[in-house]
Amino acid sequence: MLGLSDIKTGKKIVWDGQPFVVLDYQHSMTGRTGAVMRTKLRNLLTGATIEYTFQDKDKFEEAEVTKSSAQYLYPEHDEFQFMDSESYEQFALSVATLGDSAKYLLEGTEVTVLNYEGRAINVELPVKMTFEVVEAPPGLKGDTASGGDKVVTLENGLKLTVPLFIVVGDKLIVNTEKGVYVSRA
Image 1: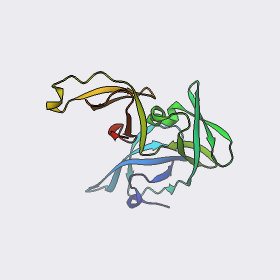
Image 2: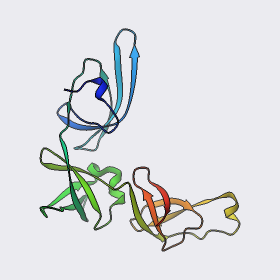
Image 3: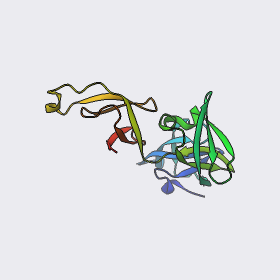
Image 4: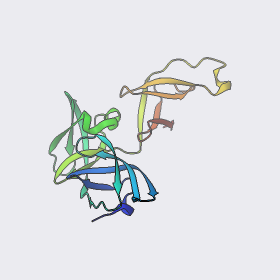
């Protein structure tokens, strides 16, 4: 069993029978009640985010989450279809489960699948992915003195703020964790 001191960002725990990942935590000491840990948790099954304060006496288990690889195939209604790279079995994950990861998926993207109790519950994307610019307003002459930015549209429909020198057809490296432009590919 794990205790209060084992809570760290990225730790996967079982709380109330559900697997959660710790997104953020803050430890504090109070006079009478002792140590408490304020946390922000994301449910790995539903994608819902909750805030919970653990008391010093609370105990919980570490979630047995395994990883495998898969390939994103195509969207279907409000689900995304994937194929396991080893068994070639197809499975679907909902938009709600994937959360922000859904906006970075392109057909053929290799992803890491998180499995809990033998079933796929979510995916992890590569931290940096490459996308092509399909729509970009022209950079106006004279705008570069202030180091300006403009908003472009990528091949997956995502709108991204980039420097003025980016044009249609450029391939950009995007940080999928923060959703920001990194560099040209």
